[in-house]
Image 1 (cartoon, rainbow, N blue to C red):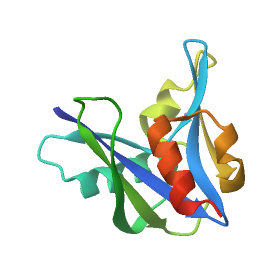
Image 2: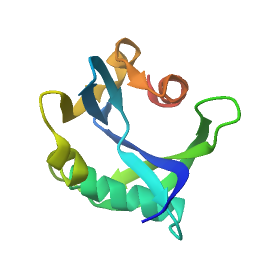
Image 3: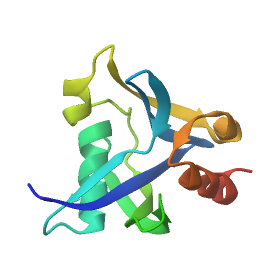
Image 4: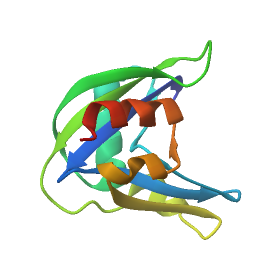
Length: 136
C-alpha cells in the first residue's frame, strides 16, 4: 500500500448534524472528518467510499465533490465529498478501532451543525467551508 500524499474526506450529514471523529492524541483534543489517504492506483472516490466503510461501518450510496481544500501553502489539494450513506448506526472500525486507547482516542460523534463553530474541527479552513455551505 503506497500513499499518494492526498487525503480524501467525507461530509456525512443527517438531521442537521455532521458525523465526525473525536480525537484525543498527545494531549490535543480535536475532531476530524472520516476519510484517509489515497492509495496508489485508487481514485479519490474509491478512497472516500472505502474509508467511510472502514471507519464508520456505513455504506456510501452516492457522493459528489463538495470542495477542494489545501491545508497549507504549497500543500496538496484534498477533496471533500458530500456523501449520502445507507441508514444505520455509525460504528467505529478499521485501524481507528484497533489503535483506540486512552492516549490515542477515537470516537464517532454526530455534531449539531449549529454548534460546529464551537468545535475544534480540523482542518480549520474546511470547517469554515462546512459552516458556510451547510449551517442554517
